[in-house]
Image 1 (tube, rainbow, N blue to C red):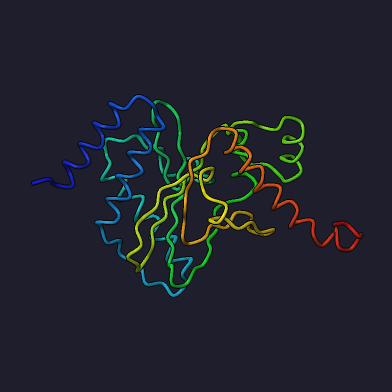
Image 2 (image 1 turned 90 degrees about the horizontal axis):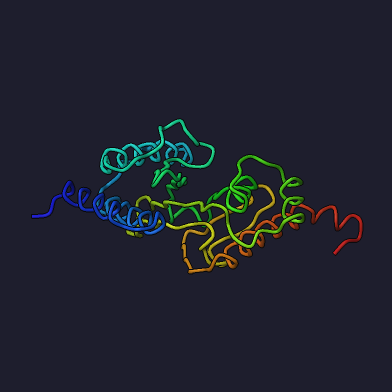
Length: 224
């Protein structure tokens, strides 16, 4: 009989035996999805869905730390601006944004902002729109410096948990927004991109957000 504990041990061994951090993380991501899909996460029952999601995210990350105890994670309060939980593989941090989504109520949900795009493109943190625009103009990346990941758990639903990176989302899975820049659709699809394609995709998201932020100004002054 295979127990959840033995699955965790097997997963940890597979991670150690894999050659690259990317392949290790892919295995961990799939193992996390399998675990969450087989585990019922108790909901808090808060009327405010955002508050319920926040508290349930804490429940998810606590369970993952306990279940995957052989995996190294940053301490809870570390890197919270970018990841709800951050595994460390071969000394490299991989921030994961945990999203609790009710597909019956939410068509889209927040996936991050300008600092997240800065992190993926340049491997750096907090920034402003103007600063990132200047950096892209001065030295447009042809490869993403970092990857940013999402773990999407669907509440009160039979939809399977999704583990994916921002740079490998399809264009149909993302909506740009001037106030909440990166909005993910509830039906997530992914695609394999090479290094240059990933960088172009993230830059495209930034350009779309920048255009939408400037639309009112362009209308007022006769721009396109």
